[in-house]
Image 1: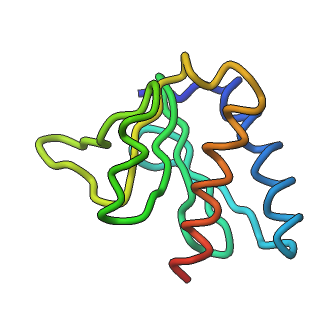
Image 2 (image 1 turned 60 degrees about the horizontal axis):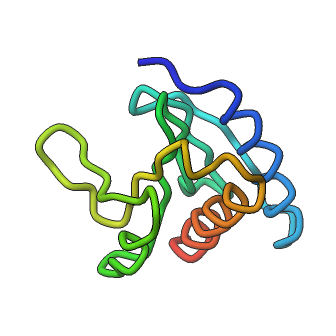
Length: 112
């Protein structure tokens, strides 16, 4: 499955700005899960897929699942703990994209 290259480009810009603002963490990209994963200081923050994002979240905090476009991240028959799926339709504005990317970066840095 291919990933959304336009969304990946937008996420890349936002992620680099956020990482720089948090002390210049190293940002890397790696193809995985059929998408493009973004790592900050070696920890995965988010993945861009064909239809939106997978964003890292605190394990056990299901409050984000109540937000528009958010749902449990499922791979095969398993729900991925600590991740949320975000539909591309709710990422149209730069502010909404930044909010979700910031969450992923914050959790990736906390996991180090």
